[in-house]
Image 1 (cartoon, protein in one colour):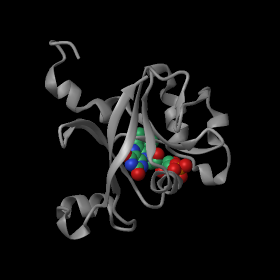
Image 2: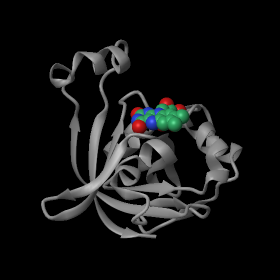
Image 3: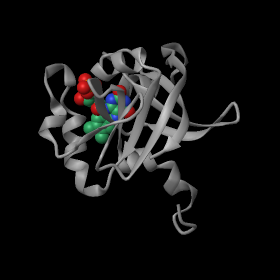
Image 4: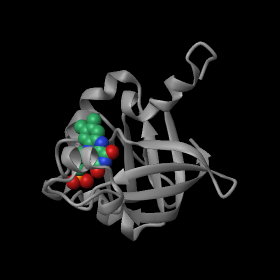
Length: 159
Ligand SMILES: Cc1cc2nc3c(=O)[nH]c(=O)nc-3n(C[C@H](O)[C@H](O)[C@H](O)COP(=O)(O)O)c2cc1C
């Protein structure tokens, strides 16, 4: 972040640039596009927070794995992120429909084309509590679907 871009630029990183959240191992993983999330500090450790609805196929992988990655891409891959954010891995190999190349990590998966990858160890998860969400957000996002699960990952390294 340059000083010209400022804090509001950093605050909008997910919403502006989108990212892929990926969980599982190279033999069995899933990925999806996210535009909600954040980076900060918890329990004195650097963390990334993502929000995944239980209906996403990726949710199963987030639940069943201890690690996940958050990958940010150059603008030219936005169309690919659009595909990964509108199709489900339940219905077939959606990554094969993109120009992205999955890359095996020790216990995680990232992508060759990513500009920045945060390798995260899941240290907290919680289903958002519908009764604590403001009405405007319930109306906008949870009329028919269960609220997101929040996952907080300790950022172990950046690839
Ligand atoms: C720009 C964009 C941002 C998205 N952000 C989120 C998000 O933060 N959380 C979420 O649960 N779904 C989000 N989605 C929806 C999922 O990416 C989408 O439902 C995806 O097809 C799920 O794939 P899966 O079933 O293979 O997990 C987003 C979609 C797009 C296009």
